[in-house]
Length: 184
Image 1: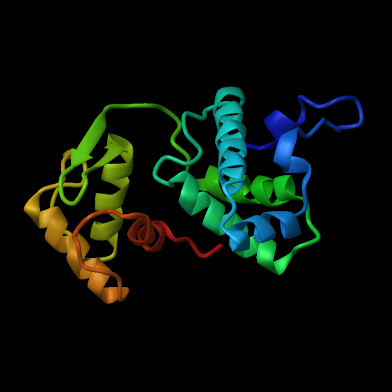
Image 2: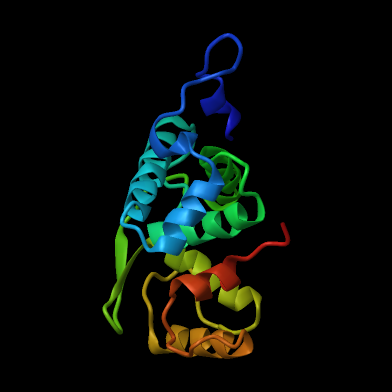
């Protein structure tokens, strides 16, 4: 998984970190607390890091197939608040190890889920969401059929209600986090 990328380092397994990755979590948290636009630089760094890993790791199409950059940065922020003396890149690296457990190994078509502003997901993410709803007893339909029917929307609303989330029937970031959450 991650070792394939790390092996691209020098003979001592070291590699150069660039940009905000070299900064400590305390600086990132300070940027967040100040509402500083530099927050966007951290987001760009994470996006570039993930893109490079998507390109370099075997059997990897997308390490973060449903997570927005803002969602990922909030995850990093929570970790950085607990460990302010850790480098930003190390927290991101640990996050990637978790993301890799649910990565997409191949690309596919996109599915537009209507409602609100509309959401666009890889069809595999939609299949996984429906399968998870079914596995949790909220959906009885065929998980292999791509699409977001009224039955799926109703199942999602019931799941959201069970988790005290806003009941939109849409696969927003908070809902997908709860839906795909593992024990780790």
